[in-house]
Image 1: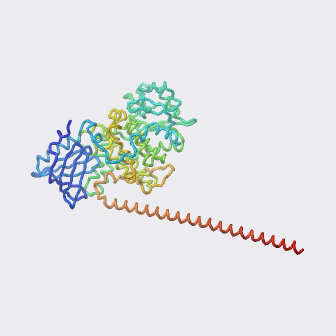
Image 2 (image 1 turned 30 degrees about the vertical axis):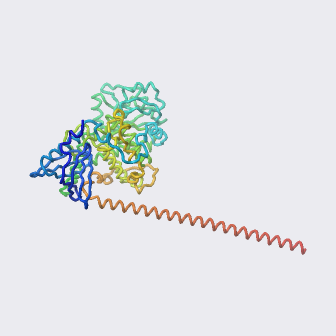
Image 3 (image 1 turned 120 degrees about the vertical axis):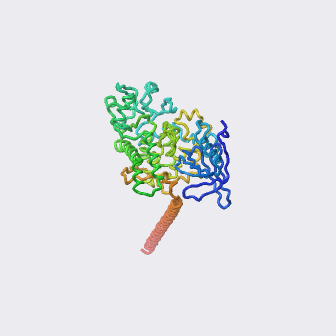
Length: 554
């Protein structure tokens, strides 16, 4: 298919761009296969807007006489308006945008056509290979499972690390029943079926003399209903050394409705505080953040304070499970709070574990089409990370901008990192050969400095976030980002960087002066010792002279 077939009107002159907190701009609108481009031709106000079609969630058309307006609502939650003279031109452009923003084939998306303009210092596709990552995990004391390089071929991906005490026969028998290995529910059913290989595999993670905890991210009622449909949960009689705890975390359809209500509340321009707070509470978004953080803290406590092994699973094991396991590692492991460590965490716990990014991020909060499998699972996780970052601002190497960037690229990107629903799909699409990795761009020294937290000081301790209502805040950097002027925030951030840089300058100066003082003290000590040595030698010489005189004049 040629993109030209979908573009009815490629260009519109004298278009007008409206954006909140920005002056109105007149210019030319152009449509390409992957971008909507608006450029101002005024010499005193040169401006360009490049918007990926894949970032467009929905559009609305409005008409007043011969003037048409297109309101574009994006997946990153911004809203812009384009005024286009001529009803036919406006309709053609709106139709073209709708067609280009809803392409069926993944291979027609921009990552397959993008050619980087920067020098590739590091290949992001090979930066976090499973074998290397699990070698690192195997050496981490806080890890609840001892991993060894034994692999099982799965639909999700080629590598699943297992404990050494589990033999090849047991692993082979699980190839058709691998739910436990990917943190999904066991298929016990109403007959109470058991799987001895599964029991052996789970028990192999226990440390000598220790019990284990199974954190089920479903309510007990939901788990029992799943059992009636062929799913279920671990029965105590077959897992006597494990204690099962239910921590209910809502599933994707409810989370999508919550996001829609939250964004609607944030876009409410009534300026009525009571109404806004009521809408915010009705969205339940902050409640879901509290539930996820509570479950993650529970998992971290079992590992840190009891030295226990922890198994986390939900229904499929690709949504709430990943939220809990990832956040528990951020709480426990300081390496996960660095930029490289956090990237590694996302690759290991989200991409390689099979979170269906293509399905979950197909729509955002504005789409009018019927919900299918869309859900802000990853955004909710990033929000939880931001809550911890907000409470421990000096313990993270990355800043809020890094988290916002990850949110944006999960929904629309020129990079292939978040395409596909699992490793198997990515392998079939040959993303490593045909697209560029997001990490190749992020980890450039030039870009990396934009994501670094100026307040960062390495903290090797476990950090325990508070889940009290007064400790959790709305993530304004995402949900109010386009509804408030950013100039003052940018100025405040620049001022903070200047203060931090000046503080470091003063600290370096203090350290230099201390060094000079120590060197001076050392020199003075040596001089005193030399002086004392000289005096001792003079005393010895005087004594010798006296003795010589006494011998000459007895």
